[in-house]
Length: 80
Length: 223
Image 1 (tube, one colour):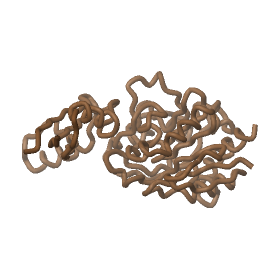
Image 2 (cartoon, chains in turn yellow, orange):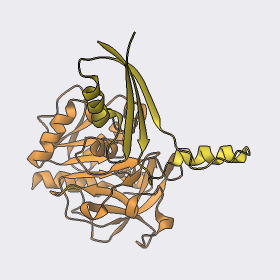
Image 3 (cartoon, chains in turn red, orange):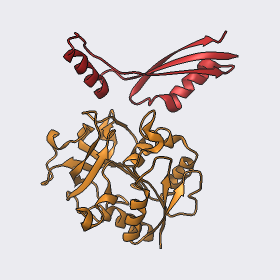
Image 4 (cartoon, chains in turn orange, brown):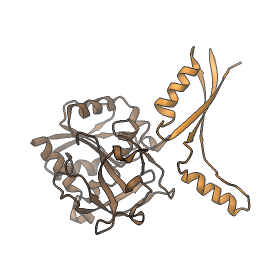
């Protein structure tokens, strides 16, 4: 069975996101009232698996995120 | 003569300088491609550079290559393992050293000389320094902002300071917790550091202060 997976990895709350700060400043300089801009990382892929949730969770812990500084969430949908 | 492996990943770029610094310190060093083996060596250095172009997170992909299992065996056996800059990032990403290296507080690449205070001289890499000594080395990184949730659990070896050894916010180039520039494992046989000792290993380069990292390592193997 094939699945379409989207993983979103975020810096934990309270941790400084320098890239987000710079982009937020740039938007404010353009006149937008932007606050607390953060830059999560998004991974999209197709996965062949009999236990997709388990495998995606494992992928996040082993490589896609650094559990010390990141949190993650994902969506898994069957490929039609 | 002690033999050291300098591991080369795709994107490593400080390997030749590191080999030269080890040679100058009295050791023998060879570059080893990451698909090879380091089993026959007395110690290993993970040099600086941009392994896998720093994609995902600096050091993250290199940290998951098979050769790191051999590096883990070195750590267990008590052999010296030194990670410089990208090598430090690989050591934290692989879980060999605690903590993480995040993008610099001001998100840009920094390349300049800094002063370091030698906090711990009881490691395989710092035994030839004086406790509290201030030394000069260059840094060159975009992700050197050391983070750990509980800094009391980490063995700090170097801290960014001024010329006199004062450690303040102004002397912190990248936002690291407690100005941390280098840490060791409990046994003292693993050191990760963001500054480049190999770029400060000859007076011609502007400082010789880094050479003692390699000399300490060579002598430690000989002991």
